[in-house]
Image (cartoon, rainbow, N blue to C red; front, side):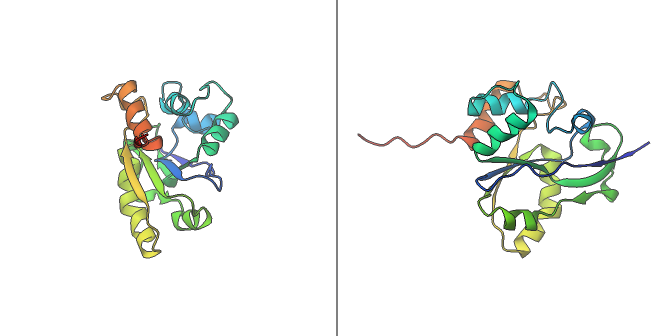
Length: 176
């Protein structure tokens, strides 16, 4: 039986420049009411390595660390029907996306969207970008390697480097 799943509130502050978007939290995350709560999900270890905090901090402290470093969290999907946690189980004909026009108007410093996995990217491109274009909202978007344990074709170290390259680009060297 398919269950209705609803995403969490956006975890964004005024200083956020980056917005990480997943598709919809998995069952463990929904149960714990915390983004990326599955113990094998690489999201928090990657963010901790990039920004220098402990991935074992309590959830609210990890979100606060992200926000302080200019990173917000949300999902493309506001609600959907799905059995289990896999994106492939999401019923496409009964999903609703979040209101991103209002989000980007409310948080004008957001200028870069990091799409955490292919499902988030596909839905964002098809169902969100046309509305943003109509509202004249321009963003940089990047398809990131999913941090989900279901996406194992790229090892942790490679995922970390790809995420780090976007969130902490190497500054250009200046001549002394």
